[in-house]
Image (cartoon, rainbow, N blue to C red):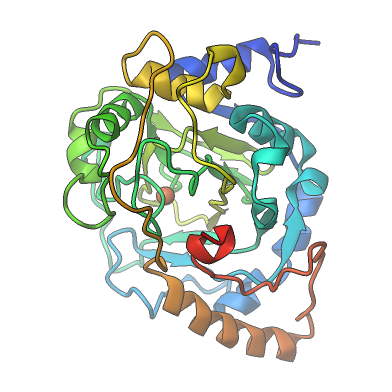
Length: 340
Ligand SMILES: [Fe+2]
């Protein structure tokens, strides 16, 4: 059995080293096919689509999506990650420096699947050989002003719920060398940037990158990335339904870069390295940590109600696990969750 990295409970030395080099790790068998199947049991009812009739597949909310039929579902149920996928949870806690640093309400995964059903028969998917040409490059977090030390996006996670996500089946693409570019920009701009302001555009950053990873995988895989990892959706020309989620954790306090390295988390150490620094440094933001509702806030609330009607009719409008008494339809802003 591989040795666990110093200061960690779950990450092996190889996984730690890979994260420090590339800013991501891929963990396999974090949950079973049966666990996934149980969570997906009524997903087509929720979508209001017929799995056996591809002609019916559409997304009324975004009919012109360049990725064809790609649907960001609302959440109906929650599970505690430490119980559902303990290996993934252990790795997440290792990367952020301990479970005690994580806001309680973000210790859960929800069934807000990101579904990519591919292009309709009448659409022609573009031939994309160079990942730089993908349209969707972005860093996560459209609900807060981004600073080098923002606690709002502890990690970027992608659990895979589909049996298999294959090449040309809509896998997420990563750009590991984007982390240095984003980190240095944020280091040099303590005033931060607001997503969507046009100040720092994902597609522009992608043109500066040379290292791309196509996250093919299977059910139970969990990809965990540094919060600055640029990533993009891709086209599902196979039209095999693809289900992933993109949960994160919110930290109670901003990241620190001014303590001895052994007192900092792997993510903090990776950020220091990405900034081109050899050791700790002082960083202070200029301005306010603004938080707001993300762009899908209204759509999620509306579609949540529509889904519930269908689930009630179908007879599965239950909650699988609701350990914390969290309201499943919880799309509060990070400001409300953090409380400051
Ligand atoms: Fe994303």
